[in-house]
Length: 538
Image 1: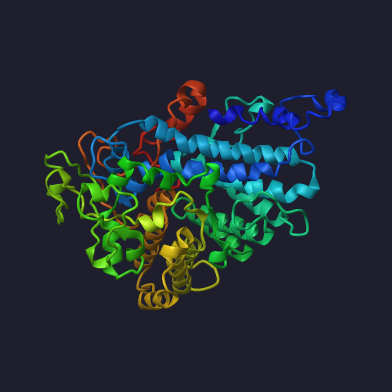
Image 2: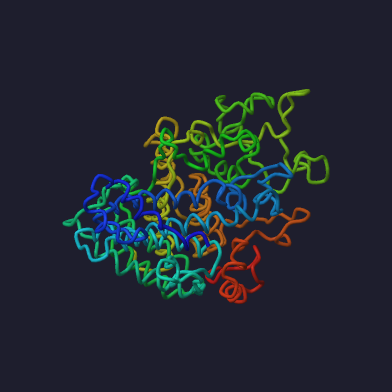
């Protein structure tokens, strides 16, 4: 596991910066593998935690190539292609590498968080940095266990203490610990003590907002358990609301990337690759859902490329964003001329261009350049829209979360429509009057719990998916079952025609931590397969 050997460089790196202090060299260079807060500013590790988290949840780390299409947010009519792993559940390209990326990056992020806590241990003046780092660690572990199932937690990140073969904790035990740790650490954050100085979130170390982040994360964790342990889900959902979840879009947790210094949004980096740019289309279910209610997001997120293969490949040439002209692509098709050729898909709109410039998928909608192409495009960790939608579900279930399900739903839908301005303020801003009118015209239908759950979670899927938080869109879909999606059954698929329910463990785990890996596999009904379900996925 890559996270076992992390941070051995920190002490040596710190000493390099103190090269002029040669008279104190012996006292400083006591152990080059162990730094402390007097030698190395632990605040520097907070931004590393945040960037590595997004490295694990965006781009080729699974989210864009796998979860975006497993959740049928995006589609691709190419085969063979690395997008076949997502669109058709057919192994192509470096699937084993893609499978391992979320695991490796999120454990790296958790490792930075764990090391930060170690560096400041016993230093009460830096207790906020320690607490925030623990919250980030818990966010990382939740993402790992949600994707794979049982995983190292209680013994993870402790290679420096000699634990090189960590046990895989059962997911039920992991969630019990995640929630308990969050419940313990959030109240310790104290605005009267030093705030972190290297926070990439818009909070800039603001303790009140970090507390809201912690309680919003608690809510997300709690709602994962609605089918596996409803009593615990209710307990912590109510506790999260009482503690104070996000109160508006100003509390959203996101990072705007710094392309000039080499830090890009991995989703948009991939979208600028010529092959990806030509292959990625919006899924049919997304465009259909937005058209059904004349959703004002449609003209913000989608565009039809200008005619012809040459124009469609030009990343600086915006397409037609007229809502009526948008067409979503069904998943599971190719361009190979057989029965699964995209020209045989229901309601195929035809291609564009002619002759050598003909583009068979030219009339399908792609993500709009104005909203998604910039390398600095922000990525969300958690936002107010999804938090309010989760509270809407909690209220629909009769739990004590303040307002009614209808009020929370309206708050969530309003925030969702506002959130595209975060990705691109010049392109994604929907007029306030338009948002108000749309929300008023599309209230939550409360005739039955099933209808409420379907509407709330379909909106959650639309919101997270079109904000390019594909991992969360896929994960909540698995948890809720909404919207109802029809699986692809392309020849040679690795799920026997079902939508993937988890990621397989990284291929190296069997060799490097074999007995603990095998114990976890033995607990999975169906074994280490994409079609197996994690504990909370009932």
